[in-house]
Length: 96
Image (cartoon, rainbow, N blue to C red; front, side, top):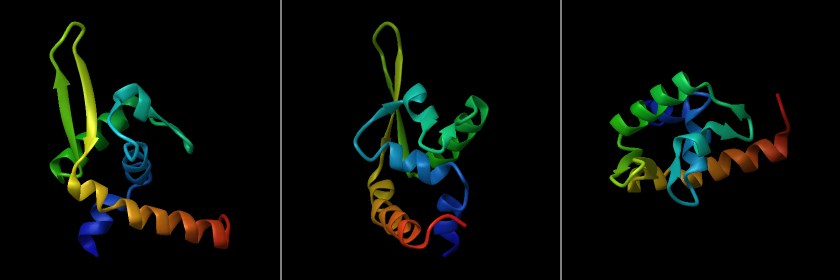
């Protein structure tokens, strides 16, 4: 349980993981979530932490201008059914 909470216990982490569900995304694409805009400093820290936990992978594409994309790893993709269950539970039980 502690490992799951390390990833999902933060307000923004589940939204970041969910934003990468359909494929790679750039920083500015991840920044705007259904729950609001993530502060750039906060997003940078969360992305770095998720990378350390091997939930996401950062790829720098070396063409001009440089591009950075974030991808879900296999470990990150394994979180998607958990997030779907959380979304379904929220839909059934409403907002707190």
